[in-house]
Image 1: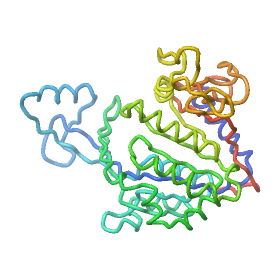
Image 2 (image 1 turned 90 degrees about the vertical axis):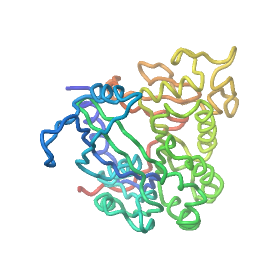
Image 3 (image 1 turned 30 degrees about the horizontal axis):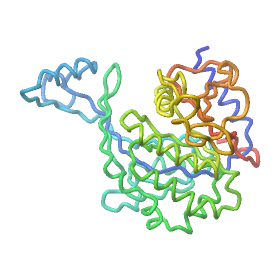
Length: 351
């Protein structure tokens, strides 16, 4: 049995043992993904009369050959489908039976508060979907050896905390979040307004929740390769503040984890070392006298990488799947000092 199969089966077994899911709120992006062939040659001018580039290397060679000249490259859109980190996450959770409220960029171009028709299937998996702006767009150039994703995220930049308050209303946001056991906030990398949302939650929502500490927040930053080290440090400092009010879990794949570790100066991570005589981000001291990145509390328990997971510094710990092995490139779960088990109620109904 492969590592991925074992991990999937272990996750399925765990889900079968859960009591009924509590509600969740997920946001706030939204993309329309165009799946595209890149034409290398044409046999004729019929819709299917072409041969697509088989590999990224071959396509890159064609583009490189145009340097100093020009090139006309034909794109064939094979399919358009809904996408975005948030909708894909929320759709999967909805299929598991979790009552999902989704807020984000899933509206029509001509009426941003009305659902975009490509999201109809997605909306059927959710308890409620609240569009706030039109989706962004991704052109996914597909090849046999991978994809080249060309993003057009301009629409997402309209989503800020102030915009959500104007569009949804502060009282309604408080009601939705007070009811939610889990908040999923994704795609910080492509959305300038995500940090304002974190700040708004800390200022306007969590102090008014009946039991904020019982909730959990899952953060997926997305690939931070294009963001600066200073951006990452600022984001981690904000998440440290969030974590003092609601426990935070940070989802990272291997490449993302290595980048985060290198920025917060975990000794030995990606060839970096911490400040002399200190540990954590730039030698900062964590809350309650502990040391860690931007004030994160250390995770409880052993730091043995074999038995307990890999420490990324400042209390960020990635847990391996059952059996101790992780599929290469799989998403890691860095937690901020507290467990992320959700409160549960009754047995789930079979879907």
